[in-house]
Length: 337
Ligand code: PEP
Ligand code: MN
Image (cartoon, rainbow, N blue to C red; front, side, top):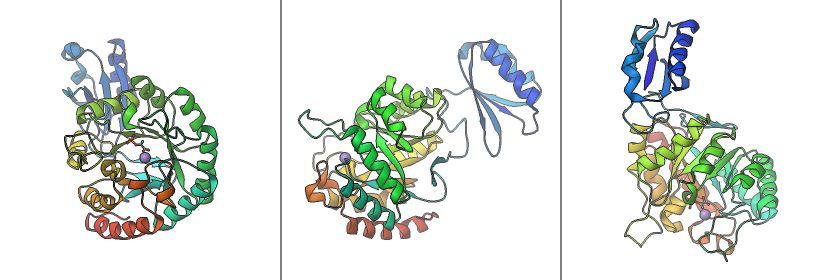
């Protein structure tokens, strides 16, 4: 349920509502929006009407939330939330671009990728140091050494950084080096990991699972927010369907659907969605036109030699050309890029 307070309600009135809820076993999350103060309460729905919340001064209305996700729901926060990652504001008026190689390979590769994506207009550098690969024989990432290379390259190019974490140890290590942590498609329903990143104090990029419905994806986000971390960005990266002409099927309709259901920013990863560099640009255009708050794109200085996901990686020139085109589409959508 959410309790919407009058904008004029004083601190004592807010406290009185919170006390009543807590005494009755509800977990409280206070959300101060621009237009209203909302107290989100998660607990036993059956007893709501017996609490007499409407009679407490300062309470405007009490709205039960029927959806299984509560804290990420639009019902709790009318305006979209904006997640800050260093200087990048995801969900704000600017389209935010995250780019970089699939995996961190060596300092030169990271440095060159960082400079190229920064020149083209990206503000967040990506690079995997812990790679959850389908095959145990594929390159698994450079771990700690990779994190250091990512951090150095990001710093030199004045970019923020994001990397994927796969368990508690990789999370703890990554927190020393990056500005944002990513939970990958394979771990979207790793509830233990979701709880850990919910307590890590850093923004989280939550990818959609291969076979996750939008509701399951939002429930995964709810895990993170319920641990106290509101800085969650959702990333649509394609889902598994019967179609095998592309690596996955990019669910573009997820963008407006999620935006109507939840207040979290949504970005799109056309690289993993298609698996083919020739399809990255058209799908990136479509994602921006459909209202995405940003893009995650794999860029490698020399895609032919990439240790991971070369076929879907753009080279620096292709990325620069894509970013140039996106500026026009973003402007048509009322955003700067
Ligand atoms: C990635 O971003 O490198 C990655 C592995 O993506 P996903 O989890 O979407 O497959
Ligand atoms: Mn990849």
